[in-house]
Length: 112
Image 1 (cartoon, helix red, strand yellow):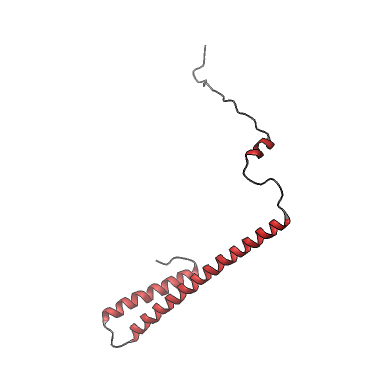
Image 2: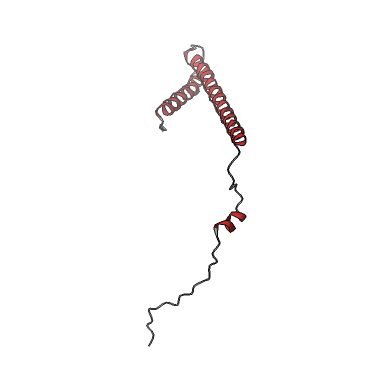
């Protein structure tokens, strides 16, 4: 009599591959790197990292200068007695957005 709770289990054959056989199909380099090649690669990576840092710094400086310019124009609009109330409203919105974003950036949290 067969127990109905028993499951029919099927097993599949798995081929065993040795490490040298796996290495033949591996696209990486198993041989140690030549010291001159390693030095050149490290110099190239250092140059690329330095270039990325410079690009990032330039972008940050340009963004800060742009925000300062917009803030300056809005501030001039706010203190000018000849500007209308509608102009002062949009200038107030821009100034408060810049201040809020700056505080959020400095504290590392989004203020909403």
